[in-house]
Image 1 (cartoon, rainbow, N blue to C red):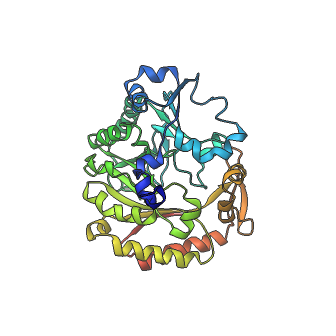
Image 2 (cartoon, rainbow, N blue to C red):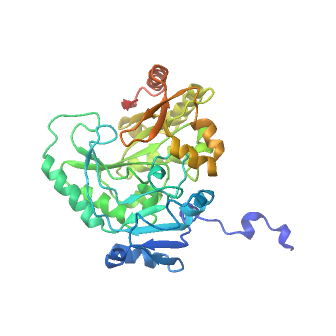
Image 3 (cartoon, helix red, strand yellow):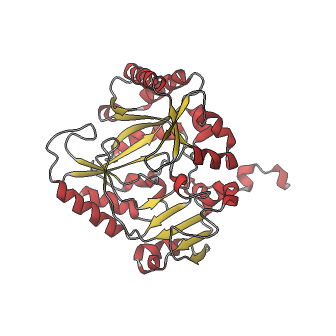
Length: 369
């Protein structure tokens, strides 16, 4: 039999989702990272990767600020990892996705969603930076939680527990492919009185089903119409995979919510969301529906990110950069952001929430803007 008679699948071994997501070739690390057990564990996990010591995980010449790297956007995300020691432990008030934003155990992502805000701060490259001092991060969360005491009044975030978002600048489901940081945090919150963890995800990592969260971790699966996601949700799990995972994660002891974010206004966008809501309704079990809630965030884009995207994925900008629908608003940090115009956006938010209420009456909308 000649080589041409073999099918592609016979000639080439099928990669697991983890292997497709991460094929680490280069690891940059701070000196302090190798002094921590977690840092040494990660370095040992990738024995064939080139290891390069750097003074700071924030300042890596040739990686950050190098405009030429934008053409290697996806390759960098897949093959580069940065190890650092988290030095500051801020806990910020949120009030939307969570009560508080916890100090993250990572920043950056191996996925490449075209609308992600994290690359705005790094410049032309956005691989995962993993922090190896997870015990210090959990200790900071514990101190803050103790200072809060009990949650005496219910809120839209949760009626009883303080909710801490542990994945504001990364996707924890992907981070769990690299180390036990997330497993450690799920275990930590399981025994932390009066608090629970949460993160939003676009990646189905079924290894998390064995973490035994006992209701103290909330995962928010991010969903949008598949036709839009195929353009802007680069290197993520499909919508069908995400929706199908909801029941399994509920059965495994997670609280599972839905994160409709960002809502991107495209042609026939309401019809596309109507179809999505019907897919969700058909797939979810009664138990999953009974505990379900959702959040909705319409797109905010950024001029700097727009310019970066033009260098690697201009097709995505046809959906994201819409001067005919958007207006400029300067952020608190001085960046130039664009959002759907006042008035138009309010009407679209109302249309979205009304449609979801009709199609998914069992799902509480926690907030929408």
